[in-house]
Length: 116
Image (cartoon, rainbow, N blue to C red; front, side):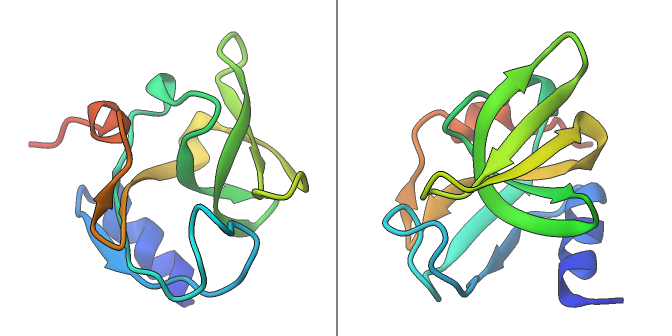
C-alpha cells in the first residue's frame, strides 16, 4: 500500500489528515511542502474551485474541482494550471482541503462529511 492509499483509507474512516504534498501543479494555491489539512468530504456538496483529494484513473490527486455533474454524481479534477486530469465518481472523492499552512479555505469545512 502506498502513501496515498494510507491517506485515502484514513479519510474514508473519518479521520482528518495533515500532510505536506510536493509538486507545483497547484501553485499558488498550494506550494510544494506547505502543510495542508484535509477532512472527509460529502462529495454531493463540492463545487467548482474546491480543492479535493480524489482518485482519477488510478492516480490520487490533491487538485481542484473544475466541473460538477450532479446528475451523474461525478466531478472533473484539474490542476491549477489548466491541466484536466479527468472525471471521477463521488465514491472516489475522499476529502476536501480545509486549510493551507494554517490559513482556512473559506466554505470548505461546511462540505465535510458527517462522522460519528
